Length: 344
Image 1 (tube, one colour):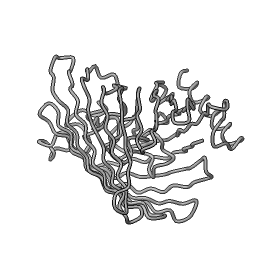
Image 2: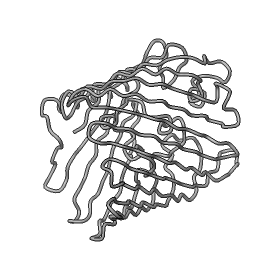
Image 3: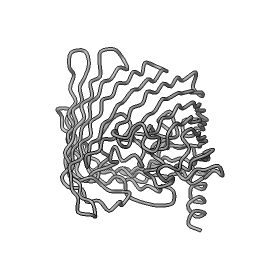
Image 4: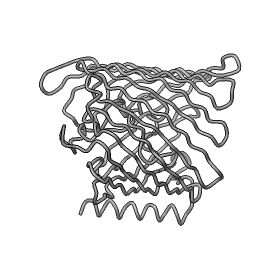
């Protein structure tokens, strides 16, 4: 009943967007409503992952509503409500203030700035693929999605390029309710936009204390380096991330290429790798590799359709998610994802 209700709400919202063709809904002179989401079908030929098995699943879906309120000519309030696979939550709830010197302060519950995609890892419409690279998937636990606290950013020209510095502190938000207590979080991200148009270099880092229900405690340290090149219709990205916690190392990287043939068609490819325990990286229960082939079709500026196929080796993330037991999975397997995504 709950899934049917959420599916009905999603269909109604999609219909409203399709018929009205709006880029945003103006609720008042100072308050706007935006939104995005996707409805996807996943199927896997052997192992079970993201609720997908040989029977397929429609449970990979989400709908988000973002309310923005102008408080002052330099200040805004942001609140995002998000329904993921039938469960609702608040993603963002913060205020910002922009100074005249290129700096901005944010206070509240904020998306954690890390790597290329973490700020908008849920927005399927504006990324090439339906499934995120492994390092951004919730189940991998490499990068937290949000934090509660204070953030500061400063952007400035440097030589013929520019540099963006972001620092933040607070506490990680545990959306998955894993029973872990997170202590003080500090982190930062530096982005250098080179003089060559479309070329970016990025370094991201965060550190946080963590305590499990068993009483064990440790420090989480995660570091990532990113390189992107996006001249016109070509989009190339490479990222590598390393996370240390409880004497284990999670290591992940991917390389991705997408090319917009025209205003409608965008084929893309990606090679993705993660090991959930670097000391056991030769065991298929502790690693997962994926070669991804996909193509997207943009119906209009609000709707897109995407289809992709994943050729997998190893099932490490399926073990972490609890969908496959260690030693029982198939080493070589594949997944297919078909999705309708939207934004307004």
